[in-house]
Length: 496
Ligand code: FAD
Image 1 (tube, helix red, strand yellow):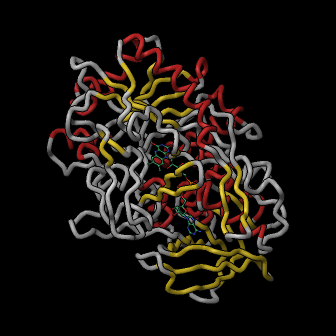
Image 2 (image 1 turned 90 degrees about the vertical axis):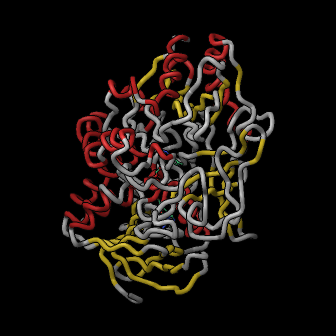
């Protein structure tokens, strides 16, 4: 409603936003959530809500006319193809030296991610969020996050026999032969559902290669967990295909300007509402870009100089290895990863044994490594173009490559194998041009206080991955969720 007043406005519907909305609503606050992506609740022309990873279509990319697949090539052949411009689910945002992949729609990154739900080793936590009490996190907020997200682990006996996890068993065998620690990784995918997929009794999702462009069945995205609970309170409304462009102080709160989009990305209406409190949950890139622009253009001039700094890519780097003909990884591969190789302490790398669900035998092992890359980028305002830019160079991934090599050079030496050079281009080993895990840009206890309250303005909060200074040492969404649980509890107790 134009001119409407709301008690709490949440920008974005990913992990930080969903936790915040639920807890505020439970405390009796009416919440309005604004999401620039689609609702993803209506089947497309093929009767399914989400497109398959192997056949990207109009639903797959956020306002692109050509796909930008993370694995761009196979056997040297480019895989990308033209698609109609549409407000699709996966944004491949090109930010100078790096492509940042992000989910778009109600549920944010939970719509497109691999569901790997990892709590970092406790000993590493002080390096992740130095100003946060680790006891509280591990006693209260990580358990709360894991339980509300529906995190579960694969049945180890089923893992040993499942055809779809042969690739992971090969990954384990090779990791262990080189002396590395191999760990199972929890997930929010419903493992019982996957067993039924394997038995052929339910429609297939993980076993039909669904992941990057959405998951039609077994994954417990935020739509099924936090957001379902939030809606059930009766106090939360969500406006999909609405994008927040400005937040500026007014009497009794903030004036928020919102553009309504059609599915071609065109703006159809511009609205303003007044909100007593505004929670920035647009993701690391979304929140940081918005705040850098609002500070630079005079809408929120009192934000401090930490805004836009401390951004990292969780050290993401991908690679593939070629296996011997007697070591096939299987033509059926579950799209849901379930294991990792942990060489963080000795080599600075934690590598997911990732699937390559192509439907054919590839003799390839594929890995997404999370590494302890010390490099950090920053967002800056370019007055000439009227855009926020990210200062990041592809060469800053070199430490990540060195750390990932601490695992894979050794495995290759033990196995007598080599790297694949055909997955990211022609004769290119490392997928060093991208990240799935943007973090930071509005760092906790720097741009905000120790609970996400933005310095300079009361009633403005950051609640998402922008708070985390660049690296979690594992996949990030459990930490984003747990930190949001911690912060909103404090805000509800002290500010309302
Ligand atoms: P997001 O989940 O990114 O949510 C932000 C939301 O805000 C989005 O829906 C966006 O559309 C919306 N928005 C942005 N700007 C505006 C605006 N101006 N107005 C209105 N709305 C706006 N993490 C793991 O832990 N495990 C995994 O297995 C894993 N796999 C991944 C695989 C892929 C392909 C990708 C892309 C990510 C993966 N991640 C994984 C990362 C994880 O999804 C993110 O870290 C997480 O979603 C970030 O949560 P968030 O709350 O910070 O923001």
